[in-house]
Length: 343
Ligand code: TLP
Image (cartoon, rainbow, N blue to C red; front, side, top):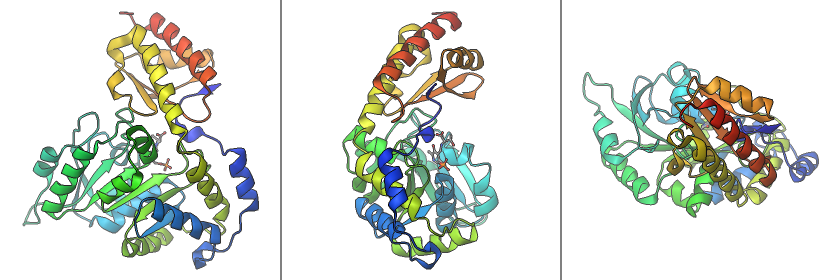
């Protein structure tokens, strides 16, 4: 099977498995796991920030940051299709006690004037804004990424308003590779961020919170409360270190594969694929009969995600070879040609 459902399906590489087997470990609740400590130091240095904290998942990082930065009974300004709004099972309302004020972005990217208009002051009886949230790359909008001018404008807007800016950087390394921008440059524009080791970077488990030391200390406390403090987590961190060392530059190959798939789909179903939107490793087919397409592709050995009745997502990653990509592209062309009436 060629599995294009998500980059979360990536398996640990042989180098990761070796590093995991040999990892020096200790009890991380005591702060005594040398491999976890090393990963956190490496991550903080890579983003040029004071501190980092390893967590079991991207959702936990997002929820911890919500809890640490946003105050309960306040509003978080966020793009309408963001992961935290759509795919975290209502956790922001339940655990952090916040409500989301959603703003449609341009291909998922927020723009400063709309954000400025959505921020509410802390004045009775308004619901004040305590956080602005960006997703980078934007999952539901095809892996789009921010240009530096747009990001700097958001930074200026939020700073003027006195509201912190957070980046769900689950796929921030895809953005960095595609844009040729060091992740530290992104990190300078936000108050806090998180990134995932377990998506395109192929580690089996783990996401990392990055920010100021006092905020990370507070997050460590809340991670404990949420049950996310782990013991000999060095076996996980060891794979994360390999991911940061070996798996970033190759993301360019995934981006190339996504362009190949988008082009194949575009040949027979042009209006249903926004090729401009395919900036990294995610391709969407929109306004299509999703279930029959997914079923026909599955019969041909290609797995895709049905996001809703009319939307299919394909994600490229290290488990997809150039030959897999070509084969998937051929099946895509054939199936779309059969299923889409205008084709
Ligand atoms: N995204 C998953 C699904 O949950 C949709 C995927 O297959 O893409 N932020 C963003 C932007 C994400 O895309 C995801 C996962 C997360 C956070 C959560 O990460 P995990 O799954 O590690 O909790």
